[in-house]
Image (cartoon, rainbow, N blue to C red; front, top):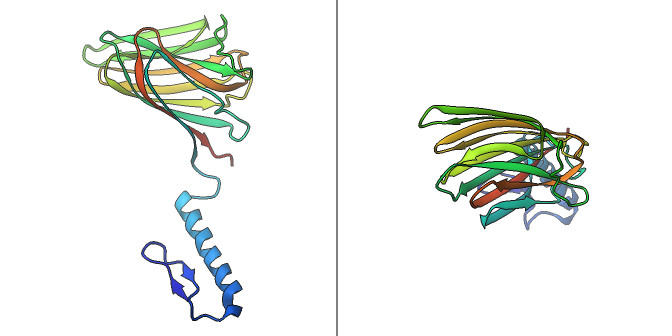
Length: 207
């Protein structure tokens, strides 16, 4: 038998092999592929699975719907964006419930939020036991990165936490969505100005 080139060297049949050797050749090739994939992924149940990519531009809010399902229990949300305002504004997140509605009822969120301004060493702490939304960042007009961990958003009380980093500001946040779930998606928005960028959602493989 020959082998594939140039990458993995899988065993493959050649045109000179007997037909009777076909089943053996297929079995050998399948074993080779199986072993390679297991090695690349680090195990059959390990890693993040891409779910969706949402691009947006010139908007004050963006909804990412129908991404939380029974397939995965926990999720990671990665945002690369620019806040198109000259003065700082806050960024927030709300959940989209099973009915497709953005939950904004009073008392739905219990959140904590800490932010720092790098150039002036300024900082702030905000928390609310009866908020209608979850604060996640103070942002200005520079490009920023935002990572959100969604812990069991299909539960009745979804939990979100994460990190934000931009040119001038950084923040950490966490929020408990009291009796607001199950969630099937989320909405990201600014209190002033518009934003543009991309949101990627990943699911953690279940063990």
